[in-house]
Each structure stands twice: as C-alpha cells, then as structure tokens.
Image (cartoon, rainbow, N blue to C red; front, side, top):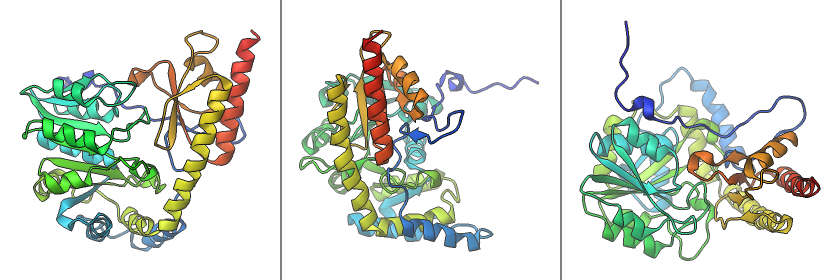
Length: 366
C-alpha cells in the first residue's frame, strides 16, 4: 500500500535546532540555542522534583494555577491566557485556527523559522517582507498585505537578528493592518529588554481583539527542557485555541516549575544582570577582533563574517567546533555570512571570544 502525504507537507523544510553535542572528551561550550546562561531557578527545580510524587496523575488540562499566576503578573484575566508546550506550540495552534489553504501568513524576512513551517503545515502560503538593516520594516509588512493575508507574525525582539522595533511602530502596524488580520507578537526575549521605547505588546492586547502576544519559559527562566510557553490575547482568541490544543498539553511537573520560576524574581534579575554585563563585553571583543556584530537586545549576538573562504562563517563555525564551541549557522534564515552566538555562561563567552580571536589571527597568517 502506498500512503499519500497531504500536498505541501513534503515541501516543508524541517526545523533543525542548534547542535548540542560533539565527539571526544572535554567541556562543550553550547552557544547555539539561546538557552539561559544561569540555568533554571532553584525554586523551579525543587518544584519539578516534588511533582514526581504524582507522575501517575493526569495534569490539570487547563493549567489553571499557572494561568492565574501569569494573569496576575501582567494584569490580565485567566481566560485571556493559554499555556502550551513551548511558545512554538502556541504559534502553531494560532496558525491552525486562523489560516488554511489559499490564505497567506505574513512575517519579516529573517523572522523565526516556525512561522513558515506553521503556515505550510496548514496549507497556507508564507509571505515575507523585506527588512531594513536586519530590522522589521512596518511599511514593507503593510505593503505585502493582500486580501488573502490572515496572520502577521512579528518577533520583537527578533530571533536571529537581535533587533527590535519600538512601541510606536508596533502600534502603527496594528493600526495599518486590516481588521481581519490577526497580529501575533512573539516576545520570547522580552525579559532581556530594558529599552524605554520597547513593548511586549500587552497594551495592544488590552485595546484590540485581534492581537495576541506569545511568551516562553525557555529563555530567561531556563526551563527549555520542559517545553513551557504561554500567550495573552482577547478571550475570544484564547477560547478558540483551547478548543484545538492537546487535552493535557502541559505536563504537571512543568506547570509546577513554571509557577515557582515565575515567583523567583531574584533569579530573573540575576539572569538579566549576567546578560547585561556579558553581551556588551562580547560585542566589544568581536569588534576588537575585526568582525561585525549586529546590535542585539536579546541574549545572543548575530555576527557577520567576511566572504573570504579563510574567514567566512563556515570556516569560523568549523574552527569553533575544534575548540568545542557550538554556535548556530544562519543559512536557513537567508544569512549565510552570519553566525548566531548565545551569551552563555562566563567560561563559554570567554572561550568563544578567545577562539574567534585565534581564528581571525590564524587566517591572517595563511
């Protein structure tokens, strides 16, 4: 018997996560997945372990306690919050609910790869808008809207570029989009940003019934292994998403860890302080070496390399691996001359800076 895959599925380029292992012995400096430099909160880890006593029980399918905590945190109502297995799960749910064959899903040229994957998985067409200086261009997004546009994704800050657009631009985008287009603000890295003109989009959710903002526990909270994300939107949108999410989509220990992690403000502050120090330190080192870092407000840095085969991104990534440093290649994002490097623990950041310096110096002598 020959099975027939639904049209379009085999056209999807599967998402490939950052590498996490290398052959041989010795420490590996993993800087490929934008994970938390300080790991998970002690309180979150303790809550997760305590949850082991009830592994025979089904979780609360609606994640009531976690949703209530998140609602208190942002001044919302529980029926305006949904939790999922990572924010990417929620982005896929949104696409399933609001787009389908013949529709278009719009996003910025170098936006998160989940957007086109989600669109293609439901038979919709992904559409990209060009950027300015690797930054979301609101005018370009609005110009790309057609009668078939159903969803507009905006990552703010954006992964992998590290750039952001101010609150005034996010508002201008919402006001310029047709009322039947859902604006999805992907704010996975919001906790790292302290720019006075930045917003995660919460105020727009309060004002409009066609805006939803997604967040994650995978980054600053250090719970990437638990796959825990959430979104805030008008209760009518959240009601739709609850109808199609997995019945028990968030594991009970993950819910417990999320509640505890959310309450551990000191851990979040320490994680942000680490990034506030080591991101500019690493930027300065990259510039001193003679490479070109892109401005970033996240916990990662996008670095441009020369096109010379001795100094290009492929050669640099290979050299870094020889020093047991794992970073992320950017060819899938249309940025083959760049590497994305996480601001990881102090030892990793220093090891990477040293390796990049040796790489550039060695290429100069060849």
